[in-house]
Image (cartoon, rainbow over all chains, first blue to last red; front, side, top):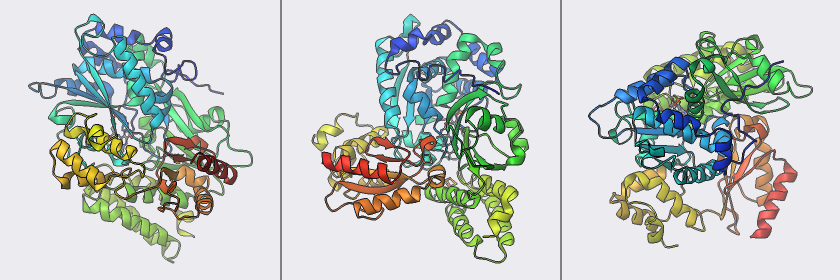
Length: 415
Length: 152
Ligand SMILES: Cc1cc2nc3c(=O)[nH]c(=O)nc-3n(C[C@H](O)[C@H](O)[C@H](O)COP(=O)(O)O)c2cc1C
Ligand code: SF4
Ligand code: FES
């Protein structure tokens, strides 16, 4: 029987999120104090060696990203940090929990990240539907200014950093980092072409570090306790803990933090209380709509970035949507494909046409005799979309589609 | 608050446009962006009308048509669908006497759909204005709608 290991969720339910004094009494802003006494480069090295990987879904090394950003466009007068708080992947609500219940933690992480790349300004891009997150973050920023953790000459260090909230307006695509930069500049959420990467040319053309809320919430702990401490959690290549959000047919759906390398079975049985009475596990959708289905054969695989990738699955945002016998994988797949059709910005043909086509074909799957041939064609079409679309949204439908076809072909084609 | 007063809460810079549009929409009793509001925004930010309309039209949370005082957003993403968001919609439609996308004749409610609102652990879920309602069933839906109706 495993138990949770809480690092970023350590204060959840234990402190009043509207009280900065509570946060400080729980050890808050000590990481910032320590960071400000360190050489910025050594903070970046610490992150790299701790092995922290982006918790927004892609799992890229946080230290490397910081390094690139700190070295990007040296003649640029300004650097920015952008906090990705646009959480919109279906099944995911981990950032909301942090923002609503311990907002100072990720704000502290953001200030440290800003110092490490020598940025002087940060934006928190929060989806506008997250009213409680916005409210708690707004109050926390105000309190942090009053205590001198934000503003000019922070804690007498000579470092200046301002932080501002920006709201989204209902676009999932704006969670994609380059699209987010467009939206931050006040434009329609059409993606940018990479390269240049944000580290070189981000918001307002300046080098920009884009990090997820949960990623940043790890930063104060790593600065304070060091890389060796951090590496005791998780695995060699996926160190640390991850917040999983488990939903669907389990007894105790919710948010759970545990070292990477946990198995799906442990998540469901030990943390989420097992399946609902009378229900048997059938499938899980890992990582939300831009995620992959797995069946019972994957229950004992280690949930790490690399192991899941090798097995054709994703960890993604940490969403785990659990389906039981009797639930329809077909319906969930169709729901995901409709989601992409709805969220496609329509700028490039393969995705605009492809997302609509896949929905129509899926709706048809059950009516045609040659279901298998149609399903194969859909997988090929999604491959073409992945190869030719402008941005990662068009590269996403293949994930749930191909994995559903792999594990549940007979259900998908047999009506 | 007048349109001008709302505009002046924000610096006249393009990157504030979403904040401005939210603010204007939230202050309108019918929860939408009027032509006058969009034109004033264009003047304030020194942008063309077309580019302001372009931004307002892109984002699903903005409406260019009048809506009810309370916007109901029912989540129809994967987990909520699994937990029967369909019947949530059906109950709302029959309680309110309107179809999805419509506004009640009294002008109190508009019924809309939404993608995941991050409440999946207590699905099915919806928002009404800024408030979140989870674990919805027929009973709970009736209660919630009634209590808002009584407040007017
Ligand atoms: C369509 C799309 C939506 C995304 N939505 C989010 C999101 O809501 N939150 C997030 O942190 N990352 C999201 N991402 C990933 C970001 O592009 C980016 O990888 C992340 O912000 C990097 O931060 P990290 O390195 O700390 O994970 C999304 C990506 C795509 C393609
Ligand atoms: S892939 Fe889709 S979302 Fe991305 S730019 Fe093309 S149409 Fe827009
Ligand atoms: S799927 Fe409905 S709240 Fe997440």
